Amino acid sequence: MWVCLLQAQRVQAKPRKPPVVQLSPSEKLTEQGLQALAERDFSRAYAALSESFRLTPSAEGLLHLGRLAQAEQRTLEAHDLLRRYLLDPARKPDEAMAQLAQGFTAGTLPPAGRVTLLADPGALLSVDERIVGVLPLPSPLLLSPGDHRLAIEYPSKRLSGQVTVAAGRQFEVRFDRSTGTLLVSLLPAILTVSDLATTLPDVQSDLATVIEQSVRSVEQSVLPVEQALLSAPHLRDCISKANCQQLLAQKVDVEYILHASLRRGEKGDGQLLKLTVRHRDIADPAAAIETKCPRCSPAEVVNLLGRTLPSLLTGALKRKSSTLSVTTQPVSAEVLSGKTRLGMTPLRRQLWADPVQLTVRAPGYRPVHTEVTLPPSQTLTLDLSLEPVAQTVVRTEKPKTPIHRRVWLWVGVGVASAAITTGLVLGLVPQSHDKVGWLP
Image 1 (cartoon, one colour):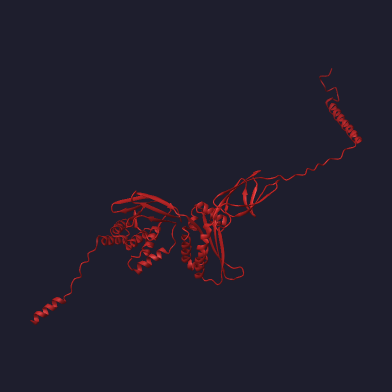
Image 2 (tube, rainbow, N blue to C red; image 1 turned 180 degrees about the horizontal axis):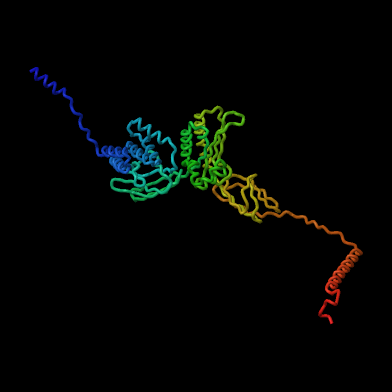
């Protein structure tokens, strides 16, 4: 009996083989894709990883597709995929992979536009026939400047369309599942020119976040100056000047410019944060503020910017503009607002809808001084006739010559004429007849 019991215990103590783990089709494809990636067979890796994501969309699937894009040197695509992997609240904890993704996305972002996609959730999204995610996306899609074909797939329907992306701009793409149409809208933007990141490099990311949040609070998107200069690189050397910033805003078709700078006070009393908002077509700022910040740390500058900027932008964008049209007789008269030269007539300029002091002047005419109030969102037309300045004509008469002097003058002229005539005749008559053959 004891022998049987011992034998039974020995049988129970025998180690068992671990159960065979059955991988799902998606997991098998992921393993195949990662193996192909390790072998640098990128075509086979994409085929396996994209099919795996199609079967089971996940944050980890974005991570693998992002690593593949990074290996293929598709930098912007890798940045977009890894950024959305980090933003996915459902991703599995993996500190090593998270650090890898964070390190890559902390690098310089290539020129890109942002695309927000609006469609029914659950659709699989692809760009230029490459899978990039599933709707809704946690953040706008990053796309390189140029034409792209977007497609979303439902179990029973596929919708596609083309969008043209500009660097630094934000677009909204709406798919209508019932009609199968695609609607693309370009969102308004503010051109941001800032030297704060250069002055405070340690808080560069925080400064960018505050500026972006403030701009979004007034329903605008951020167009960084570096992205805008791709369309007009010849303006790079003058971009610190207001008129140059306005030229760039006109070139990239945005209405407003935000200029932020930090400099030391004149008497060494800390730093001055200067914020200016301009319209691309109006010389005077829409709004401006200069705030002292004694003994400011970089973090305090970020807080000051966050407290100041939203209200400044709100006030600037609410300000109404007007159009001034001036014609004159004569034409080409100079028009000034205070000491600011607006141009020559016929003139058409956009100004803020405020009272303005105008001076219209032309050489030889009396200047016209007038105060007008420009109506909001309307055109004020002035047709002026300038009054000539009365001119004083001064006549200068030469003194008359006495009559006896005039007589002797004419006598002298007659004598001189006779002498000249006699000389001419004598010059024509030969002095000797011997040498003239035609005389008898």
